[in-house]
Length: 387
Image (cartoon, rainbow, N blue to C red):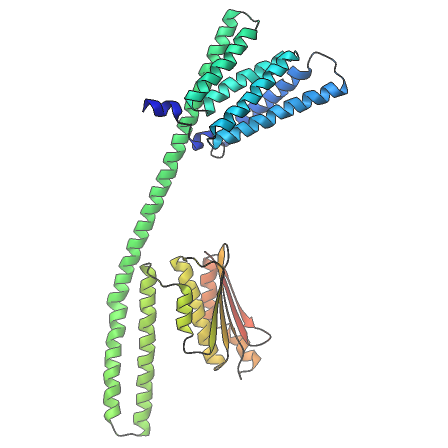
């Protein structure tokens, strides 16, 4: 434990400025601005300089600012040797400023390195750097031993207090992230539990009812087929067979909805291929495939079903191309048919039915779009929903 205290870095949450409050950011940048102004004053204040000297001084101050920024980046990434190398460059710049009689600039660099090292480096590296910089400052300072001692002790305490404050903020940020994650997991668990309850209710009521209807309709079909052939008998048999087919499709869709509620849905592309198995249709999948949320998956499936139903209704026998594309932030579905013997006006009107209107509303609720209308050949339904 003691060894970890000396070798551990301050956490990235503590060193990062991304999570700081706005007032703290204003204070931080204000202090930096004041320090840069003081460095410029320490370089040029109280004397006359030629153009080359001014350019050299500005480049020196700019170079120190760039090196300091690089040190903040490397220390944020917990890279020890690059951080120590950049700190060494700043100390050498302070010695150069001292030799050029820029006393204030050298003092700012020494004191800034001492405080920043304590704040951002592991203690095993920070203490030698701080001791070296403050020791050099104490040797060259001419303000008297009491002032020098007070300044060095104050800077050491300031650096350590800043380190403790940064760690406290980092710990608070980590706890906040953990709490948010726990709440999100709790909400997801509650949602899954509610979905499972709804799935059970649907299964107990609707699925059982449809299964019972299938049994009775099959029994009715067998009884009717035993009767002598006739127009009335054939008409009733046709209706019973159609009702049985509708009940079977409804049961299949109910099971799909139950699977979606339980999070057990099959890949969308597999569903699309099964959906068009009995039609002259082609399915193409583009982009990097990935798992979709239950809401997105259900929206894509329902739109595909509705679009193919419209094709069967208004353009029977038409060739259909179903294209599913995985985009970086959304998934796109396009159902395009080659047209049929129906006039174009009827095709255009077929896209304004309640089914596609309901799918458009569902897509918009998810932040997506659905467009349906006639194309150069046939009819096109285009869906885009975020993932």
